[in-house]
Image 1 (cartoon, rainbow, N blue to C red):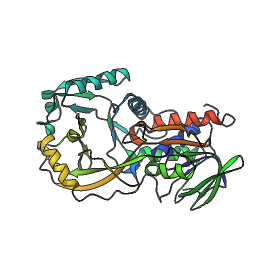
Image 2 (cartoon, one colour):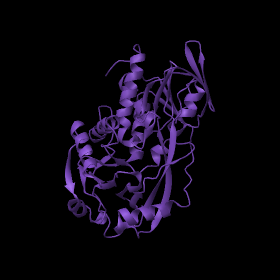
Image 3 (cartoon, rainbow, N blue to C red):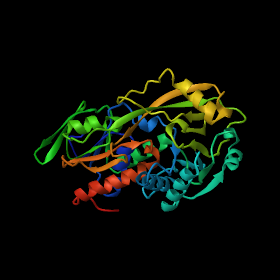
Image 4 (cartoon, one colour):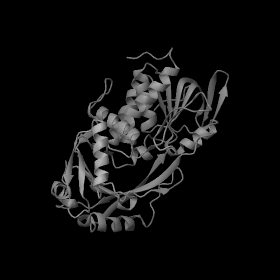
Length: 369
């Protein structure tokens, strides 16, 4: 990666999806004097690299769905400036529910945001993916353009594209303090000091800590831990190219998802326990919780052996949707944080929105390409 510069117009704290996508889109606006600071040795060691890689457009509300639907379109048809193949493999998804009203809400949301879909009844769900036959439900929304994201290809495509345009990506650069210095901002890191005009907080689970050190008073983000599992594959498992299946409830005790993966089935009971930033240790009882959930929700999968387990963090802004925009008290601090579990799907849309906000504040640097 790159050396820490003495100065940059924009310093982005965090080298995950939010930070890399913001840097990539800033380059499209002509803002290329950008430094992305990552505290770890590599990009994507936390939430951006520890996820199930599912592209799900229909989310919990309209704000999230708008970002995810836009992000998915940009993944399917990458914008000008993207190099290499699309990181999205379209498989479709089945969003399964116990109540017709839940399916109706999802269908209305899909229509409002241009998400191609159809309604399936319970028997059609079981026939579409036999591995989940017996899953309790009234039916599902099939979202045709959902799929599976190569998270590594997405993150490194964003970072390498930003670097080609002139941005610098600096690893092992943990931010220790941020303070005004005349007309600029001084960012002190473990690699030295860099001055900037704008600081972007895209630090994932550490967003509240980073923003708080910069003087922000509204910095109470919440990180929750979720466990994911590889299950032993078997002839009756979902085939390559099958849609992923996500039982969306209603109610968290009914939520579970499963998709085909290269090394077996990836499944989760969609647990969400509050955690500290960086706490991704696997809970001893996590496999037991999954087994109990599958026994009720996907009985054909309940006896599969767990071959690997890992945990990841999902970080939420207290207002619910992601926080994208200027801090209310610190005029040089821009938030791009709280991406929940939608970082991979929404990354290109989130970065596009954030870069437009920042470029509007830097009119002498921004020139739309």
